[in-house]
Image (cartoon, rainbow, N blue to C red; front, top):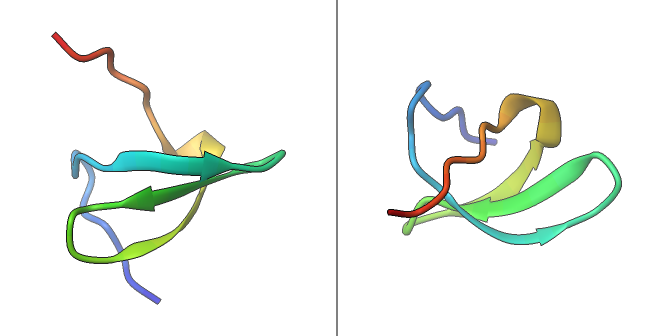
Length: 42
């Protein structure tokens, strides 16, 4: 298990009903969707 600091940017790899599979470039794991803020790329 790993905790991410607020504001950490991650890439979404996959999703299920309530979860996103994400990577921070080093590790991959699952995060509840309610904990993720989607910001469009510029």
